[in-house]
Image 1 (cartoon, rainbow, N blue to C red):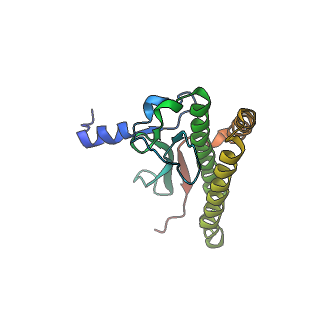
Image 2 (tube, rainbow, N blue to C red):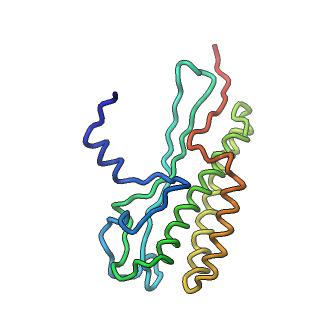
Length: 185
């Protein structure tokens, strides 16, 4: 059995990793509450700090494969909510931000799988693809906030759209992507 240090335990408790079955709750928002608008949006109820952890692995047993882990995280200690704004609608809103980040990760995983990194010209495309996906993601987050700020109906439409996209990209839901590479001997 592996020995887990207290620093590792703290880090594990700091993050929630995206899971289709497990949803965030208001108890997960442990950051310091704020008193002003956030990101210029007046009346912001909550802020979710979500991101994608990236790690590369190469195993001796598989020298012709690089494993890339893209894991979507929710940072409990940097996410916060106003005490009097803890409603189901706002929680669903924050969950959608988390889900959109998983959608970005799936698109990134797909890009790594579909591009042949052994062909130099193809391999050079990956950073451009990732940059483009990230820009689209940021625009999507802003559009979602703008659409759903005062409309529960718009938020429901976004829920349907995101769920459909997650389902469409379901084959890329595993955090680890195996990328074949040519090794020189």
